[in-house]
Amino acid sequence: MVRYTTRLLVIAVAAFLLVGVSTARAEKKFLGSDDAKEKDEPQKFLPDYDKLVGGKDADWVYFPNGQGIKSFKSVTVKEFDETAGGHDARDAARDGKDYAEQWLEREGFKIEKSGGEVTIEGNVCNAWEPRGAARYWGGWYANPGVCLELIAKDGKGAVVGELRHRAKGSTIRDAVENGLEDMVKSLAKGR
Image (cartoon, rainbow, N blue to C red; front, side, top):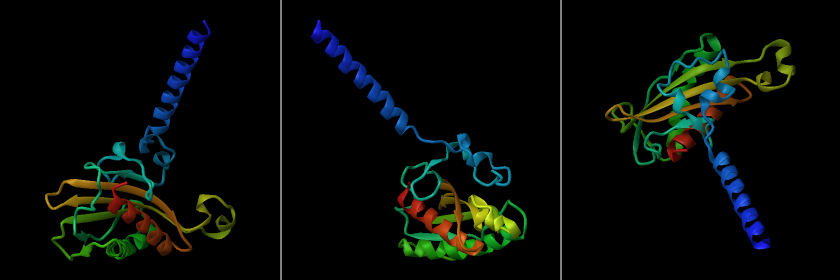
């Protein structure tokens, strides 16, 4: 009887651990997150918000082929768009292309004006610069920041990566640079 009870206990513990591990491994989806509920960060740029999952360097990623752009050698970066509106977002979008190219070069990619093996399009879906007392309130909005999105497409126009990331910095420009550093790392590694 003791053996039977011990076996049942071992089986129950194993089943509990198996369920716990599989639940822990379940990927967190963007659309179920608090980030997706932000009213001032529109979801108009990426085609697959429902497929974004938690990333390693960037907040949210989706790689249809599972490997990012590490198999490509040359990249073309287009001028960034902005869906947020306002002068902060326009300023952040102006800086996007240069910083993206800078970080892609550091990852070992050759930057082409046109005709790269991969084309990267970027978007600023929010940018904020705390004003007045907001600088001292604390929390996420106490520092300047941005919400950035990237789409990477191969030469045939097929999407090879989609990313969305929020970043902070000492200025909006610094936040753009910080965010693109993280996003390019994720894009290069595919996670």
